[in-house]
Length: 176
Image: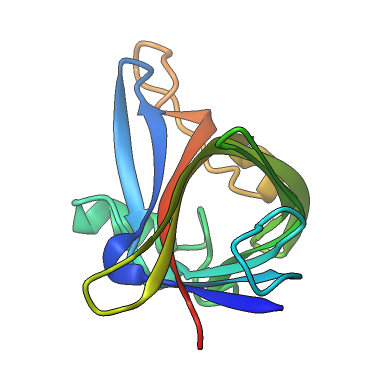
């Protein structure tokens, strides 16, 4: 068995959402943790188990007022639900492509989600650490997780879309 821990200084956990249906706002979580446990000692990630958490208070959209609103009960309700979490049910690698399935919990609601993307490979860095890279993406409907705040512009347009894109570019470090 091998255990891998996320390297937060070489990883990004981002989301993208349409604003006014004409442009996209990007946000990120800056405080997160993840482990990847594999059945073998080698670098076979098939069937590995991923556990991930992110602190809601670390949300950053480069706008303090918007970040405060996202942390409020209108959206994530960070005081009552301080973290989002993901627990995988399957991890499949085939030809460099990743399919990661599991349960995502936001605001006390758990739903299945599938993330797909690319396996970047495994290398040993200049410090002798073995690292593995993954880039995966997925999509969710924020309403499904109780993120129901909505507003309409004077012209009748939607302020924030329901569809949210997830983008995770992560690097894991093999633990001794």
